[in-house]
Length: 167
Image 1 (cartoon, rainbow, N blue to C red):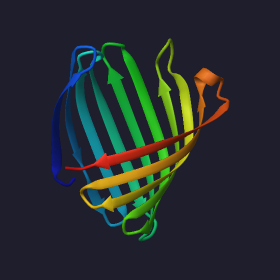
Image 2 (image 1 turned 30 degrees about the vertical axis):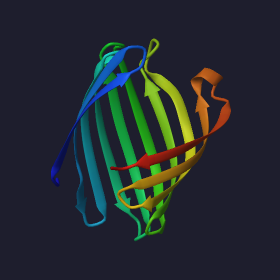
Image 3 (image 1 turned 180 degrees about the horizontal axis):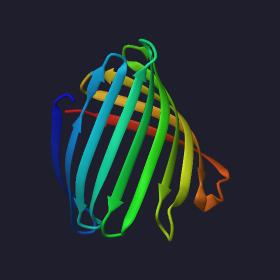
Image 4 (image 1 turned 60 degrees about the vertical axis):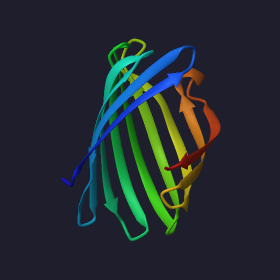
């Protein structure tokens, strides 16, 4: 494995009184020829939701200079709710230019709540990401079609817009 990155992120919010949140994250990346491996382990605590842990593993294969096939597996446990959730995603990332990317993905989520482990949702999406100003400003646009248990797995649509300021 490569170097292990350690992140500690304490956070205080003023929202209906004070809320606190802490995150301790360990992650790394290893690249061997055309393969990419990214393990991740997180411990978190929130004053309103309790403690938990997240374990993630991304496995990637570079199909070409512009295409990467990724398989992502995540497992999250929340102690307060006694809830275990898993996410699995298969995606294909395409570099359009040095600072523009497309990602085509299928994601599905399962959980042990309310009574037994079962499928909660699956999502098809395409995400466009632009690194507008390197190390300062990134944005992404993500149209999606999702099938959620709460809607009897009937198709629904959504659109996410993300904006990251880095400083």
